[in-house]
Image 1 (tube, rainbow, N blue to C red):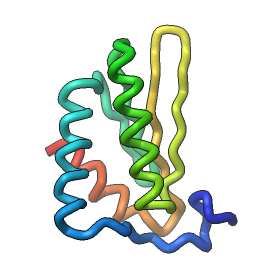
Image 2 (spheres, rainbow, N blue to C red):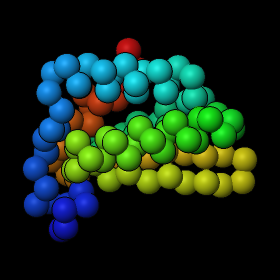
Image 3 (cartoon, rainbow, N blue to C red):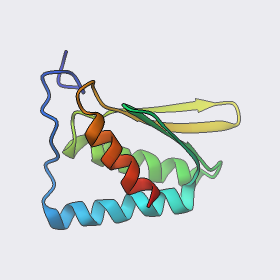
Image 4 (cartoon, rainbow, N blue to C red):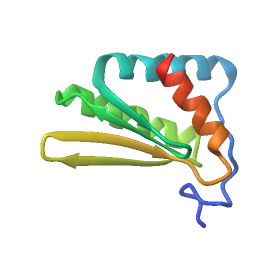
Length: 107
């Protein structure tokens, strides 16, 4: 697979501890302010966004920055009639990383 979340991409985050703490706060703020539902599985989490434009803008901004520091995440935005969803997926073998990410979101 390729470097866009494939098997040859290391399962690692490039943020240091201070930046990671800040990123955790940003994800929790996004969930508190802009997410109406979270659907999680072993390798995927789907965040159903509030219908506000600000929710979409915030989610896209944060997802882009997350992809930069954690290139093993596969990030997608689905825009359907009446619903917008931000999905993050990890490759098989990274289930622990996804479980940690989901736990961080839902604390």
